[in-house]
Image (cartoon, rainbow, N blue to C red; front, side):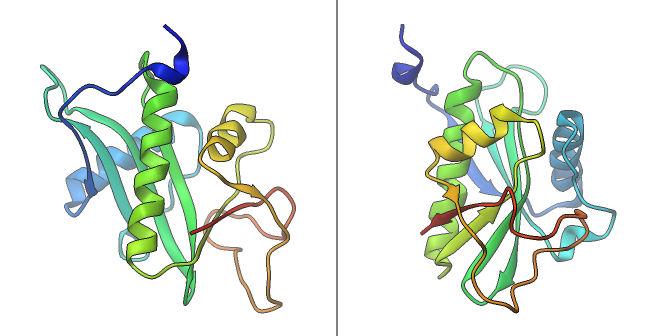
Length: 161
């Protein structure tokens, strides 16, 4: 079977993570990938999302997690993301980013930016499959330096919503 024809099983849902326990589970998943997952206390500034398998026989059923934060009126930053290792990794990652983009669009955002970690080709490819492309960040007042310790426009990707 070709990878692009693989489908997620029925019973997968995407939703915001509201409780501290859910957010901590998502943070742990992100930390396991080696990506920054924000210092304690980012819960109020970051909005966490999860992709859940409701039919999971054991464990939590969390397949992927992502966190965003607004950086200006109509722009958000994808701060952290993780896809748990499964045979459906590529499909899960695509669905996770598509759902985040749809949610941001519905909330009035026009653009989301992300910066894949240096040397992590798979992160860049995941973002590019979701439609992200390289850009210079617009506007002299745009601040993307934050608790992730990143700044400047080099390496950033953007998705117009």
